[in-house]
Length: 218
Ligand SMILES: Cc1ncc(CO)c(N)n1
Image (cartoon, rainbow, N blue to C red; front, side, top):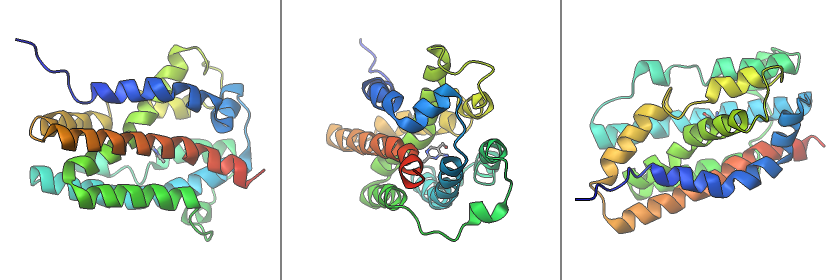
């Protein structure tokens, strides 16, 4: 008897295929160089705060549909990743709350990514879950890669930020992957393929999400 691999193993493959694109991203390159670009960081944090405001209710909805339960308070209640954003705001030498609340419109990428997640959730709860899984998974995987490849050294100012997200077996990522793998066994191969395509699309948006701040603040 061969045991089928967990569905989430395919996420690893997607990340390995997109690794070069992430590494070539000017936002990631600046981070590797330890260069602080305050405007790009502020832009990123502001967009991310909004993005997470859409993300959490979608995740809650998918969990409800698939498990009949609400998500762990501990997992949900990180105040939209305040701690991670605080690290970047400190680097940019600001703690201005108004930047997180923001008065600027959502960027195109933020809107497109949110729209992609919303449409995926409407289509099918498993496809939705997998489209959402890219958010914690990609950051966790990328953080692990950057450290493993020796690109973010302990003295890099972004080390605490990378450290916050690293580890695909902790935080939001762990329960999410467990739900992905459990649900995958109950859906058709066609739905699995559609879900993986949604994950790949989310991964492309993740890369663009980093980039947008660099381009908007050039
Ligand atoms: C866009 C985006 N992707 C992933 C994460 C990690 O949770 C985040 N905070 N924002």
